[in-house]
Image 1 (tube, helix red, strand yellow):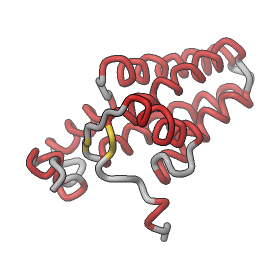
Image 2 (cartoon, one colour):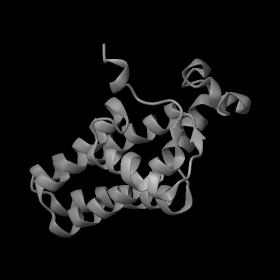
Image 3 (spheres, rainbow, N blue to C red):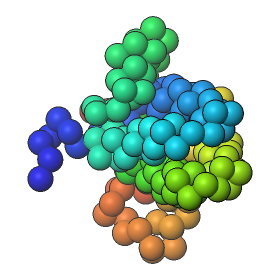
Image 4 (tube, rainbow, N blue to C red):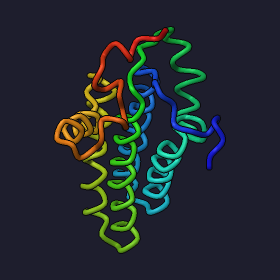
Length: 161
């Protein structure tokens, strides 16, 4: 069992998520250009750390929470479970790219990470979280139980007390 300080936060500051996504865009583009298994691994590791603990263990998460968001001075709280789900999708995609890269399939790895660039850019620039959209769809269709994110179903639970 993880200590409370290492658990994924709920709620999440939308601006921290968006700034982290912006950092992911930069690293993902560099990864595509350089096409090195090390960078694919670092990209996947970042997603793994964010799935485990949100920003706590993630260098990009820490930079967002401790530097970028305070400089912006903005807070918008959103439910954590959809953001964690989105990070898990990012982990899956980047892990596949890492495996492709290790197998010598650089073009496949680059194309796969291109999907991450698109998704992270939508999140960062426009606040459109594709993973959150999929989470909502799955929750509405009973694949993800409502108990996983009650705030997702009841907007009044999203407001701080």
